[in-house]
Length: 314
Image (cartoon, rainbow, N blue to C red; front, top):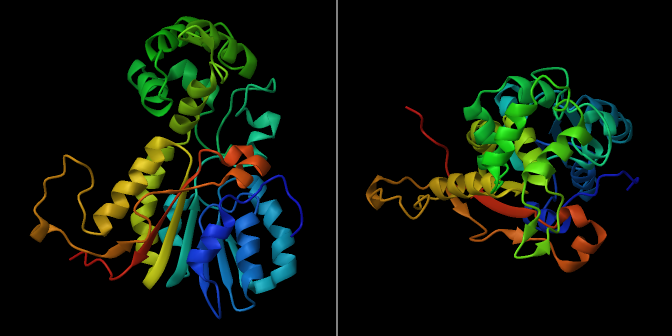
C-alpha cells in the first residue's frame, strides 16, 4: 500500500467479516484517505468498490486509486446520507467509518483542531453550510446547549454556553486558539484534584463539529438507505468513535434484528420483524498493538450486521 496520513481502523477485522473473494461489490461510504478502499481492491481482483465522500480533498486523493484500479473503483462526491442517489445497487458489503479523517484533522485551515491557529470552520464540506465560527455567533441557546451538552457531553456545559454567548461580537469565537482559551476558562480543568488528561476544550470542539455537520442526523438517514442497498446475505459494518454514534448504530441494528432497541422498549415480540442478524452482540474494539500504532483509533467501536431479508415498505 502507498503511505498516507490515514491509517484504516480495524482493517483486519473488517476484512474477516467481508470475506472478499471472487466478484464482490463493496460500498465505502466514507472514503477519507482511501485506506479501507485500497485494501478491499487488493483483497481480490474480482472486487469492485463504489466510494462516497463529501470532503473536496477526497476527490483528489481518489485519483491515484482510479489510476491503479481503473473501472473497479467509482467515486461519488456527495454526503453519505444521499447514497440512495447512486446508480449502483446490490452491494455485498457496506462500510461506514464515522468521524473525522486524519487528513481533515491535520489540515490547520480546516479549523477542526485548536493545536493550530486558524479560522473555526469545522465543516466536512467547506463548500456548503455555516462555518463553526458563524454557528457560534448566530446559534440559538437551544442549539448551543444541544451541541455542547448533548453532542460534546461536556459536564460544564452551562458555563461554556454562557461564555460563548458573552463572547459574541468580540472576534473571539472565530479563531481556534482564542475559542479554545475561552472554553478552557469556563471549564473546571481538574477532577478530584488531578489535572485533566485532555484539553478542556476537546469535548466542546467535538460537539460544535457534530452540530455544524449534522453528523447524528446524517447517520440516522443513511443507515436505512445502506440496508436497502445490500443484497440478501450482505454485510453492513459501522465504525463509530462517539457514544452517541454508537448508540444510534446499536439501536438500528437491534431494530433490524427484531430485538428491543433499548431497555425501555416494550414492543411485543409478535410486533417485531426480523430483517437481519447481528454478528456482533458487543462492539469490537481495537487491540493494544493497533492502538500503539494509531492512537487515534483508541475509541473506535465496530458493529456488524448481516441482512436476511428486504424491508417491505408497503
